[in-house]
Image 1 (cartoon, rainbow, N blue to C red):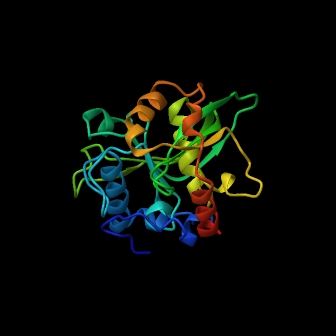
Image 2 (cartoon, rainbow, N blue to C red):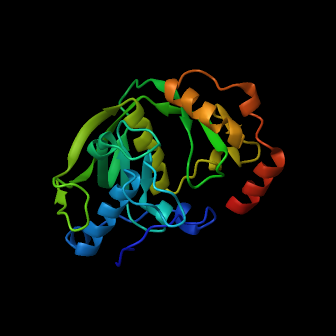
Image 3 (cartoon, one colour):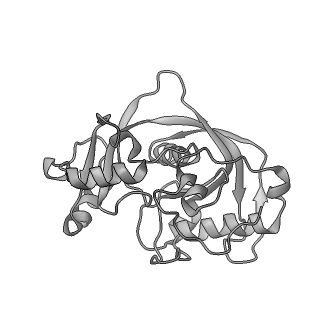
Length: 240
């Protein structure tokens, strides 16, 4: 399989976002094009390189299907929030190939404020997530940094427990690998209201981000929960 040398978001109606992603073979992991691809994912997530048509910005996470690639690969920042690139973001980037998650027995459920690049720009979800998960998969690191040409190191199967925000981010990105989109649960009829679907006006987005970064347990203001029915209907039609 040939991997792209530039990344752009797949349209939200693209079938690649609605089906389980393909496992990456050992042969592919040994290819230069795959190493270049995951390095590029890491550079985009850490804000060192821009996605096509987007500004350079540190991201919380990214899954390969979101950029039109049928492969079970995720990249996420374990600490850094969306914002300008930083040394912290570059230190905290984690990349996994063929990840899988298992929920430990008696795990608590917490509420999470989530956005997604495969959803409307003013749409946010306040939804339940597990507070911790067992994460396994092949972790990829770049000991010399993510500059073009740097060498990738593939570690043997990692098996660890992930807690808090990193656990929430892993669950979100693994949803993409399983063909689940953030809006799917809210576009059923009747919708499965798991917390709430938020419409945050552009002028209030900075306030929302400060609120979401400060807390996961507090319900958002009611004024943000009134997602326009007409827009939801349009997305329901588009998502199929």
